[in-house]
Image (cartoon, rainbow, N blue to C red):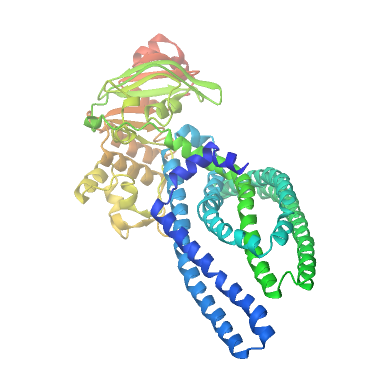
Length: 578
């Protein structure tokens, strides 16, 4: 069973990604061997105390043996400290690797996959790294350590007494079979507890993010009931799980207690008949306890592997997505290209629902394009496709004649930037927020970008100017200020295509006019695509793309589409563009 688990694909992938290195493994194995062999010295000396010193009454020899026990224990102490230090280095190193892989994977995941997961679920998977690390620790360190112990101590047990050794191992088949049954039930309950805890974390995130709405609608009791129901489910399943673990612990300990009693009886019988000595029995007892402990630990790895299947599957789901990310190594020559975009027969579905179908669109460099349509028509999905956040199910998307599939994401993101409706700003300085991914920018370039975005005046009035802290430890910004900084951020990125996704829809009229004046002054070297319902933005566009049910149904300027009296005319007439 354990062998099958080790060859289970997720474990093979896990071991491959986090192999600490042959030198480290060999070195730690030597340390384990040194500690194990040195650990025999005290029990061998104790045997001589009861078999030689006590029967002969030699007090001097007794003190010599006692000194030997103390010295050998000090040697074991030093070796154990060194062993634990290097074992800790390997264990913490693998945990570091796991977290690195996980973080890189989340950052490289497709937007579609992230959208399908709640924040609570992702946070809980991050916590799973600890459980997976325990499994890795068992795979590398515990197996090595306990294998060394068994290799040295097990033959010694049979040399001391083959009869007692056989009796000592009698309970193992029974304990092994029972542990398999308990492990399956434990895995099932762990999955239920994990899912409930993820749901609780998600609700907590919703409470924090929507605190004002909850307060304004007096919805505290409703959210408390939701989260309390999760607490109750976790409590119930955790109690069942702990009870089962407790019962298993009692059964295991009682079987071993009965086995110990039988061992003592047989040993006493052998000693009475002169076939065994008290010292040999003391040594056998010490050696067998260590051997049985190591053998139990190795058998327990199967239970640990079964318990970790759930967190490992969740972890590997993220990491596998990362390993499947298509990163192209060539095409670096298109670091900055004209903003010509072409979509040919693009189709995209989400959760088995078709969002975009048969989309054909060509946009030339420097054009001002407005994308309009009713809610759910596919406008934002089109933007996500253009940004390569979503990958089309079929069809092609090309930038300046090069298929997106052949362009590295880092190159694509330098050429296409977005100003969303709700801009995210992170804890840190204003300067850091202007440069979330591109730090090789001079203060002069930042100055020009702020000036171009009409943000220079208010930024330089802040207490620390560009070094002013934003967030929980600093200032807050208004919606208009954030939007101007978002535009400055885009100007610093200097892409060939700028996507404005409802960039002014949440602003008051004054801030809207301010932002709109900035947008209208954007140089014609940029291709600008505006997803908007603002009539003032739409009318000034070179072309208007009208979407309906995931399709482009009309394409033309304002006058042409009004004369056509189609979908756009309906939006215009019914004041859905305002």
